[in-house]
Length: 209
Image (cartoon, rainbow, N blue to C red; front, top):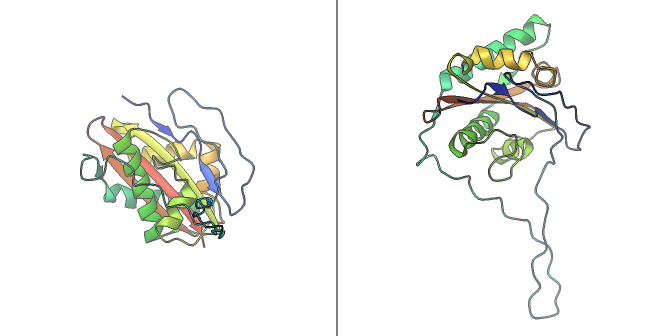
């Protein structure tokens, strides 16, 4: 069974990349570290037609939807656990005199989409199976951001609960820094359970417009 762990690389993203911090991983608990993420896909030039007329570049189409799709994947979303994670995070923020983060629908969609992707395609990373980064997913679902931070976690049994996920993030400097950063105003949480492995995947996306 997978060992419970927060992300190998908690990610904070700005419009321009920032230096990375990478804490060392441990054998049994979540290990994070911020990683800069580029904000958008790069354009590519279209091949010129037979005539000598130059052709302007066109934007690269968004990568295909990750497979397997929700229709073929047995993973299920746990919306009750998502609400609990938000409550626990805000309790930790308020205990330190920080303002609470409010739930944003676009960030919730981005987080749920990524947790589903990890559960259905059996991986654990901030990079989606379609090559997307946290910033890409937030923008894809309609969030206009000046800053994005993402933390992820996975665990089984008693380690696959909201309290275990939040505690794992608190125990990791990189995850804690994002979770308790006063710059963020919004949050979206996605919690998805994979019955095939008994693993629960957590994604929390923090944003500032």
